[in-house]
Image (cartoon, rainbow, N blue to C red; front, side, top):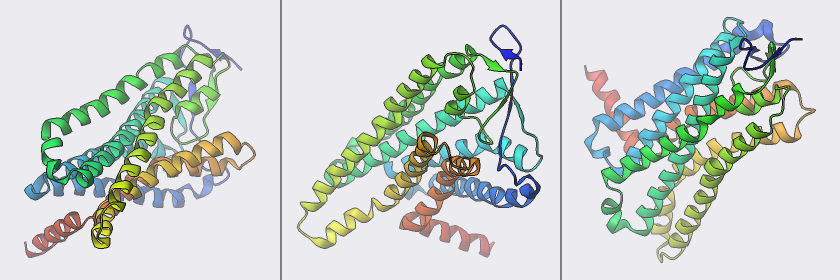
Length: 314
């Protein structure tokens, strides 16, 4: 088979769905389509409620808006290839299109990790310094946190496509998933991938790895503060404000860890398991976050119900 390098034409990649179930893709695409509809509609609803309700113009809800925007971006960037594979049975994708999708998938994933950390910081301040909460988390501070979260992701992932361009591939390469991920692309190269692998590991450690450690430290501080409160009712009330965020953190990190474990130790596992774990990693957080925050956050839930009542009256 012919070999690709940077002096030749770009190679082609073949996306992979659930192997052996191609005849049932029309049925499989229905729940996938439903997941996208709920994810996009749910996150747009969260943004609309926060935007139109002045009482929700607070740091906690500004961070929730950032999370919803990130989830919308993640859903949007994976949607074209998912539908291409499961609706139209079109598996081909060019190197440039694959690199662009890979870039934005990892950018939005790193941003989501940073936003979850920012939301943990918000809870730390609210519980440890309630009287100084508004003074610490001003609009300018929140804006800088959002800008830093996006800037870090964009800068960290920026070299990755150019490092991939230096690698040699065969003219036709079969991916493991219905979308492009860095670890999947470098696995297909027939040249040395050491630099790309090392840089990819550095990106993960300096972003999600660091964020996860800081998240644990944040909740240790919260736990110490809550346990020092004399009243049991106050302890329960303080911890209840963290439930939605804990669910969001688990929804994001659990599939990611599961996918990493499958890739590292599940070489003998069915390819269907790999695809399923990758789909869960990218589809479940945008689906579950708006549901969790709508159900568990009283202010959001009441505003949604209020909007529904207003719509019925009109």
